[in-house]
Length: 101
Image 1 (cartoon, rainbow, N blue to C red):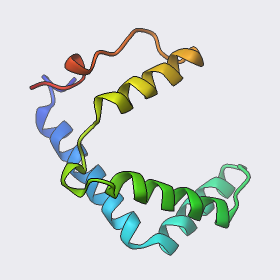
Image 2: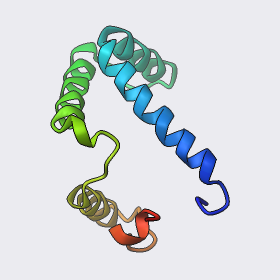
Image 3: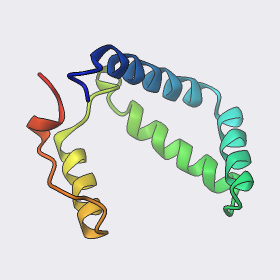
Image 4: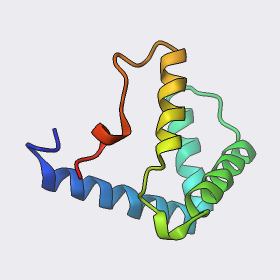
């Protein structure tokens, strides 16, 4: 997909990072939006829990500010393992194949 749409992929990645930065800088608004979407989709929604989750995401995202937007190989391996364990991964994902260098 990236080979056919490199600019779209770059713009998506940039927007994703900007979105997380906005979300982390506006936690009340972020949690309220998440709660609204959860309720609209008839999912159990708890403000305190979503706030707790956002705080943990903040810690994870900002634990190394110089690497915001960087995918740690160990994180990809963990995600792959979780997906495999739950039969949600059709084929293995190699870190070297995940990014175009």
